[in-house]
Length: 567
Image 1 (cartoon, rainbow, N blue to C red):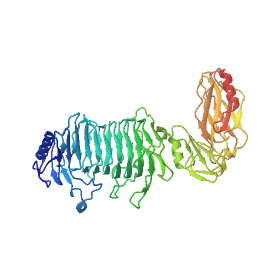
Image 2 (cartoon, helix red, strand yellow):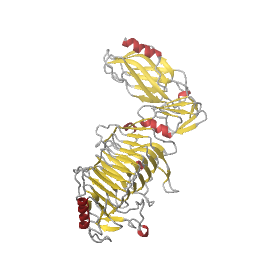
Image 3 (cartoon, one colour):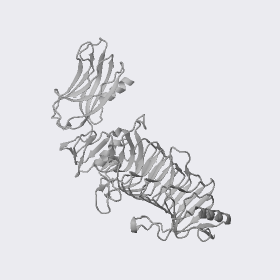
Image 4 (cartoon, rainbow, N blue to C red):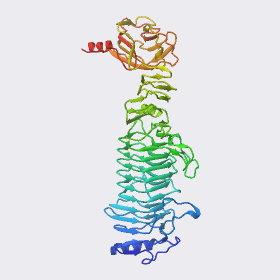
């Protein structure tokens, strides 16, 4: 196929000073009528546009597909290549009809508001092209229209002068083998069925490299994220069925621009590889590699600080306060690829639920963080010679401690079996430390009435341990129903009240942590019936059995009586 040369055949003028819109339009029309390609020779061409009639047209030039452009005398963007530039506010291509095809290859672009108006061709491809300091596609969420079926293959986007390269509603499109520098690559809204594959996103000076809002069934795979000021991927609200897989995340969350200056507007939550803002539906982060390194080439702060960060829950976007759920499996993480696994801005870990692996071969702050947010429970194994230090053992974490030592700066909410915790030996299994199987009834016809149980044997081993109180009981009337644990003089735990059961039996089960300085004084469990006001003779609290245990164990007596009463 021969060419229509925009200079030799259509009179285009090089130098970037004369508007060549007419000459380029003539080349497109001629090429289409003759079944030829449009050829753009080496040189700089001002084309304010817009150009129309690209249906089934191929435009080719000469490009070396550069990855970086420096300012001043080192700026080689326009050297010995075909450059088409706008006036800063123009759009190069008008819309292209549906069911049509177009291909642009080996051209460098700069100076446009965006490259093309919103349209839905059968195929519009950019191959081995370069873009400098310009938005490429923009279909804002509050406007009508979208982009469909665009392909960017082996293209480079170096955009120090803008915020984001691809914006808004883009559908059924693909980016592969591309390089993105400085500007965020994507801020997608209501985008669907896109493939973002095998790209390099490096020296991104913004709060994210890729952001999704209200997006569905997009695939982000086999990309390399490196030296991003903020997070590699940002997941805003209402995303559904997106897969983020097989990517390499490295040195995200430094809060630094490519020139070493501090990026503006970034917070602690940006110091993570992945930043999540609100509820997700069936979003999967699988089989990625997360690594950490210096913020500069060979020096600087080690970054990132976290693998995942979760922003403060916004009641305006999440009025039902639904926990943020997503899947995080098969990823390569360890205690060295970040300081912590997760940062939750408001500290409300209950608003995050992650479906992920539940068994770990060591105890560290990563595993403890995972236990705070996992959808289920975590089991971690501490070896005989290991000495692990964590800030707490969360309630959903169980440690099998094979003779090792655990140092906990906070509290042990979860169970530790065997070994030592802060120098004190732990039981190797669940253990009932107190049981009372007698039937006790206290009426509410007097003041300050309660049911009290005393554990006479001193157990210093329980200091700092999670203790479970189990009560099989029933109530009638408006009894007080308070529950407290004391050492005879000091209230050690004020637990949630008993339920009002209206003469039906109920199993009460609550966990609390004994203070680390508990000296082993006999524990007392007090169940309130009345305070300073007497009730009617028919009001009462009746207890059939009580047990206090290390772990979740319920005594055989309570199990037998539950079966007896339900028979």
